[in-house]
Image (cartoon, rainbow, N blue to C red; front, side, top):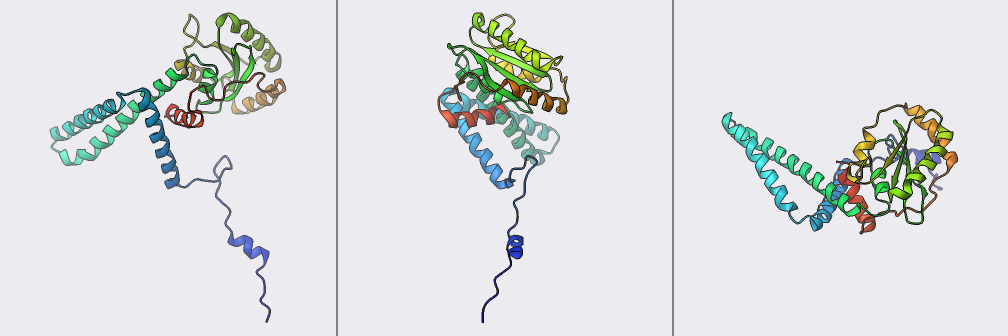
Length: 255
């Protein structure tokens, strides 16, 4: 007696479609996400500790000091046992904050002065920032990067000021013909007068006033696409260590 084959409809129904997040990507389970975060933090710690030998002791002192203060409050309130979990939690939180800041400082010290450093910082910013690296540049690896966001268009130049100032002015004129009355900000990265130091670049850009709506940003993005993408190669990762270094740095910078 011939067996009936299962219909294609029942087969399709038995295979559950993966759940998607807001961006349309398959959702990652909580345990897997926690595991990925733990691996990234461990990786960031090992890379930072190589350049910051005092890091373990600083984190230990921070944890003990904060935990001791919280527990002392519990003793004064006659609730020492109740405050033990709080002491551990606040101590761990304080150590993580200190770790994030020192790891970020270590990463900035490694990239500062290297070609592509400003692009690396811009691409790691939180939020909807559309970065086009190396839209203009010179053979000496001076570069102008274009950023589109709620403030408008931000042009960021890195390199020798004597060379990039004129490059920045040319790119600003080119962009102005496309975006019309949209605000255009120009930033020169460096330590001189009127320049923005690399460690402060991200916060400087993110503090700019919000002049556009999300819909206006999308419209401008389509218009700016007429200018094309990068005109010059920008190093994909200015730090030694390649992919491994870039993963840990982005994890630390977004804390």
